[in-house]
Image (cartoon, rainbow, N blue to C red; front, side):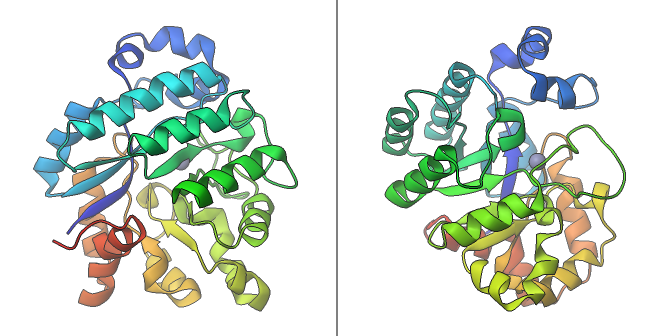
Length: 281
Ligand SMILES: [Zn+2]
């Protein structure tokens, strides 16, 4: 089973009315001002999956600062997933600093959300350290068995739209403070795997996964072998970052790395299948 753990779909209103949303949200503006930064609907995701041979995709929303935009996007994700026959797994989006967050989360879980993402605490205006927002996210993850997918980025290296991410100390503190919560640290965790060489950090990473989204844009392909050594092959999830990166290209790059068959099987889908409790094929 091939599972892409990191894709984004947007409601047609956002795809067609991009300019309006560029005005309304600074984080959206940072990434999507460039027209090369593609936006896709659920139909386009399903067509891409068919072409690339991907069985299931986790579809994420965007970390809007405004709670109402998060609600609109989450409703779309849930509807698209419900109509997909199990091929789209919805990760809803939420503004944990909003007033009705707990009600929103309860409703999303009841309608089939399996996670929250892609969360962007910096853009959304909260910290993951000693904050009520972090408490709400951890509560929901625990109460409703949701995985939390955070946008992480490297503090060093080349600058690109979306580089402003979660400081590595914030994601590190969150997973240490909430050890029972399943976390997906996107884009190889912005360097977090390196700190697994510290025994107490390694212990805190017990339920932390790292996805491969946008690898070709960020790292040499050696990143696979190195991170496998640091955290183990069972903690790595294949993700493309579709439609910013094509699923076909991301899967091809993964297969060109030369992993052994078992590592590849785990990373391509089995790790995500177990995390998301999907039935075996
Ligand atoms: Zn991201």
